[in-house]
Picture 1 (tube, rainbow, N blue to C red):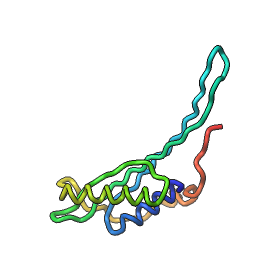
Picture 2: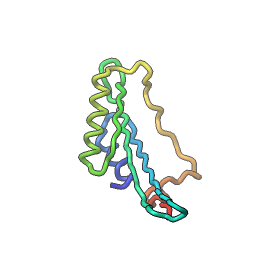
Picture 3: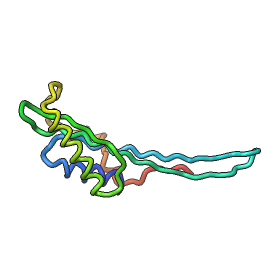
Picture 4: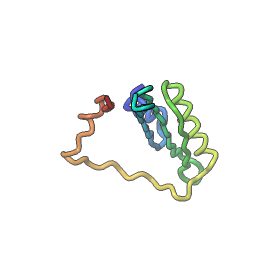
Length: 123
């Protein structure tokens, strides 16, 4: 799954619960040298997803998070379930507040233009 898909599917899985889906994807190039000679090289990538859930609970909004690697919809569904369960177990969050109503976006803001672009990779 691409990060964009993870975000959209995660928000769908949250349903009527408030929350956020955070995707951190990193890539690392490893080079190993011995006697001024490159002996090993390789690239690795890591993706960690954090789900923040704010379901309605008795007395207000709950707050729970869960993080982990995600490569399938089942992985993401498990994170959403864990975040929701943590929020429900914790009860009302005394510092939670109702979300700010959506307003109009600036004409200069065009997130959709880059949403489907692939991330830049190192060569």
